[in-house]
Structure formats: structure tokens, C-alpha cells
Amino acid sequence: MNLTYTLHDFRRQLRDVANMFFIAMLPAALFVMFGVLQDWSSESAGHGNVSAYLMVSMATYGAITATTSIAGSATVERLQGWGRQLAMTPMGTSGYVVTKVIVALAVAVVPVAVVYLVGLGTSATMDDVWRWFATGARSWPAP
Image 1 (cartoon, rainbow, N blue to C red):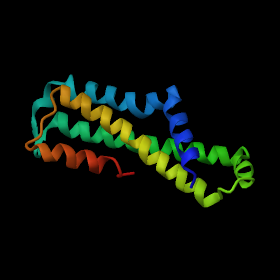
Image 2 (image 1 turned 90 degrees about the vertical axis):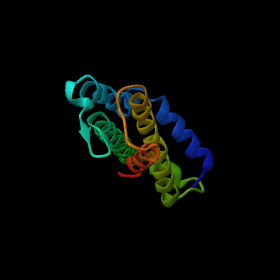
Image 3 (image 1 turned 90 degrees about the horizontal axis):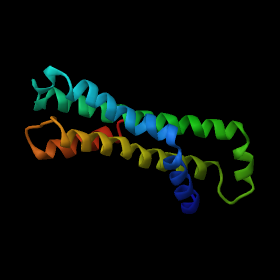
Image 4 (image 1 turned 180 degrees about the vertical axis):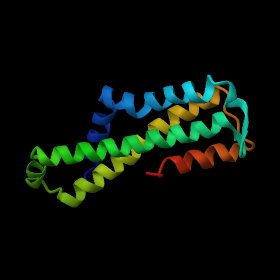
């Protein structure tokens, strides 16, 4: 694994506006539409309300979208010959895979953070503060 390449790829993923829209903004918008603006969003569900349940669901959806998108882009890069380019460097195939996994997990934090910040500012409630952290942490590596 090459730290310089990892940081470069992470920044490249964050600069991709269309991809980041579907990774972070779409789950947040879906959460607002279905978890905040509905009359039933304040009903009790488990250890919180329906809004909190949908917040966790949309954060998980965003994390899954992020990891799937990056895995797909890695496949396209390999098909376009990026693997041959990397073969001329000290970083091998395993380093490339490790880099993509690290970048995917790092980018998957973004939708979880965005959706939880929107939930914190709206009607999502949970019984205990630790549940916010526990569900957020569980939403992140779920993919």
C-alpha cells in the first residue's frame, strides 16, 4: 500500500461531484423526505422514533452505495489498463486492493456523518446518547 496514492485516490473520490451526490446527498434527502416530513415520523419504534430508524437505514444505504461505487470504479480502472500502469511501480495488485478498501471505508464515513448530522438537527430521537454512536458505528462497516 502506498500512502500517497491512497490520499490521492481519497481526494479524487471526494472531488467527484456526481458520485458524492449519490453517496451523501441522496441518502440525506431521502431521510428528510421519508423520515422527517411524514406525520408518522415521530411514532415510537424500538429505542427511538421512526425518524431515527430511517436515519440509520439511510446512513447504511449511503455507506453501501459508497463502497459499491468505489468497488465498481476499481473494476473499471483495472479494465482500462490501470493495473498495467501500476505494474511498473513498486505497488502490486495487493497494494492496489488494500488502497481501494481503505478509500472505500473512508468515503463510507461521509454519508453516515451527513445523515446523522441531518438527523441530529431534525426530529430523530433515540433513548440514549450511546445509541447514536453505536448505530452510527454499525452503519459504517455494514457493507
